[in-house]
Amino acid sequence: MRLTRIIQQGRRTVHSNRRFKREISQAIAIKPLPDQEIIKALADAAAPIFRAQSADILRLSETSGRQGAGTAPSELARMAIAYVTHTVLGWRPTRIGDAIGRTRYAARHACMTVEDLRDNPDFDRRVAVLEAAAVVIAADLTS
Image 1 (spheres, rainbow, N blue to C red):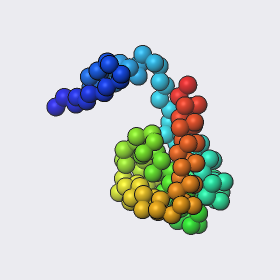
Image 2: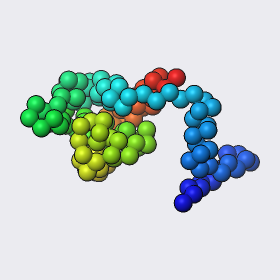
Image 3: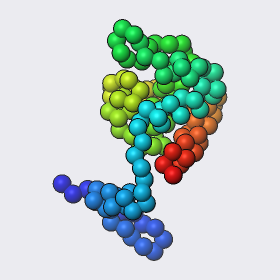
Image 4: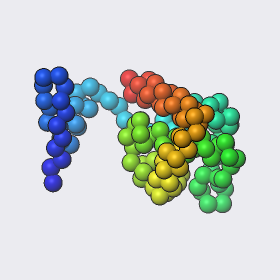
């Protein structure tokens, strides 16, 4: 099935599909980075925002090989990172889950939880700052 989307830019209309996107990404030489590097940079940015330690956000449980429960701030920061990578960077839940050591279902749950928590103005401000940081991190790491 051919994926076709129309993007209007001023008076020009560009029809894009997977092949077109691949050609564009090759033309502007976007170098793929390991997802863990991006997650680590986001964890470093999220640590002061959510008053958590970066190591706690990234910590893996010794028993299961998955992310440890950690403290409430580190869990919120981890969920916010999952949300931001989905909304800002456009990652799928499977990719997010692989990058943060969770399942895709846990990544989806994190996105839905953060979306619900954004009704709180303080939490919304924190996520907005993390979203801005994600844009800067993605721009820095891909250039």
